[in-house]
Structures are given as structure tokens and as C-alpha cells.
Image (cartoon, rainbow, N blue to C red; front, top):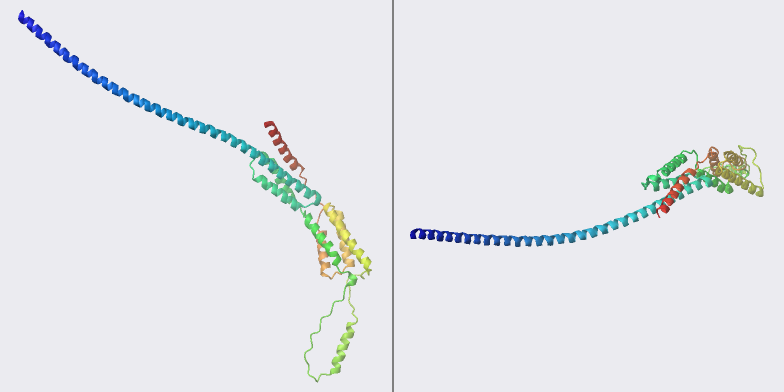
Amino acid sequence: MVRVALVALVVIVAQWVDTRMQVSGLQHEVARRSADVDATAKAGRAQLQQMQEALAAQQAKVGVLEARLAETQSQAVALEAMYQELSSSRDERLLAEVEQAVVIAMQQLQFSGNVEAALIALQGAEARFGRSVQPQFLLARKLIARDIERLKGIPGANISGLSLKIESVVAAVDGLPLAFEQRPIASAKRPAAEPRPASVDFWRELGADLWRELRQLVRVERIEHGDPALLAPQQSYFLRENLKLRLLNARLALLQRDGRVFREEIRQSREHLDRYFDSRAKSVLAAQSTLGTLAATDVSFDLPGMTETLNALRNLKLARERRGTGGK
């Protein structure tokens, strides 16, 4: 029995020692794992803090970016408003300039019939429209282009040039020589005599010289036209003034585009030149040539109106003003 008890005691002691050793090993393992968990937890907390700090930094950056975005958006809105205002002002100024050009063209046609000046004004308006891309200006641009083509198609419409030709003849009237004042054509000068020997008959040479001088005292010359009218100085003055008056009447008929009166006044002026003035003088020939050119020009043409173009421009201005008032 004692042996059994000793064996049982030894077994119990061995089990207790083994259990203690296992418990001790477990305690060491738990302690080690607990230390690992604590280290991992510390590392996680450090990483979490870094992440929080990085998140805070990112949020700060996002806040700065949002502020800049808001500022940029406000600037964009302000710039858009400024652009709209500038665009509206530019379009209004453009319409005003084009309307003024069309009015000038109408005045040139109505008051002086100056087609060239009207064309220059309309071409300037077309060039101004060419720098704009607004679609609402398309109709007005087409009307201006149509008016330009109509003016270019007018034959002999250079009223200003024709008027200047009449003015040149009027200015030359006071200097035109009259027919009864013309002088015979001087005979060709005899070439100088070559030196002759002293043996030449002196009296024969003297007689020939005297005969030539006597022949110069009387000249007979044919005048192609009828007898020129002899006019007193006062009558000559009124003749020139009457010719000027006819030319001025022709100029007035030209501006009024009255072809019948224009042709009649030019015809009467040419007859005055033929009858009373020296047709051999270069100034008279130049005046006759100018009047001949004028007589062959047809001035009884109708100039086109531009009321439709002007109304289209004014309607554009009125529509823009209404939109501006409605926007306010």
C-alpha cells in the first residue's frame, strides 16, 4: 500500500510539475502575445494619428482650393458680365457707325448725286460689318451689299466728275478769245539771207525788201464761219456772263438729273462758242471738247433709295434697346 501511495504521490507531483510548467509556458506566451498586441496597437495608433494629420492637411488644402474655386467663379461671372457689357456697347457703336455711313450715302445721292462718295460710304459700312460675327446683322449686311451692287450698275453716274467738267469750262470763259478779235496767221519767217559777195546789185536787194514790207501792210485771210459778230466791250462782258449762266443752268439740271434741260443748255453753250469765240484757239477747242463729252452723257437716270437699309438698321438698334431695358 505504501508503494502504491508513493507511486501515486510521484505521479501527482509529476503532473503538478508538468502542469506548472505548462501554465508557466502559457503565461509567457500570453505575455509575449500581449506585448505584440500592444506594439501593434501602438503602431496602429501612430498610423491613425498620421492619417488623421494627413486628412486634416488634405481638408485644409481642399478648403483653400474651394476658396480659390469660389473666387475664380466670381471672377468668371464678373468677366462674363463685363464681356456682355462691352459686347453690347461695341455692337451699339457699330450700328451707330453703320447707320451714319448709310445716312451719308443717302445725302450724297439726294443732294449732289455723287455716286462715288455714296459707294465709299457704303463700302466702309460693309467693312465695319465684316469685323462682326453677330448673326442678327446678316439682313442689314445683305441690304448694304445689294445697295453697293445697284450703285455700281448705274451707267454714267459720276455726277461730281461731270459737275467738275462744267466748272472748268465756266472758269475758262473769261479767258476765251472772241472771234472778231482773232489775228491773221503770221507768215513763215524768211530764213536769214546768206552773206553775198559785194558784187550783188544793192538796189535790187533794197527794192525786194521794200516790196515785202508793203505786202505786210495788207493781209487777206479766209474765215471758215460767217462774219464774226462785232461786240462792244460791254456786250462782250454780257456775252461771257450769259454763257456762264447757261453752263450753271446745265450744272443745276445735272444735279436734278433733268436730261432734257441739261442737253439743251449744253447745246446752246456749244453754239455760243462756235458763233462768238475764236475756234482756232486751244482754250476754245478744249472747251468745245469738254462740252461735246458732256452732250454725249445721259444724266436722266434714277438713283436707288436706301430707305429699306436704314429702316433695318434702326430696327436692330430698337430691338437691342428693348432687350437692354427688359434685362434691367
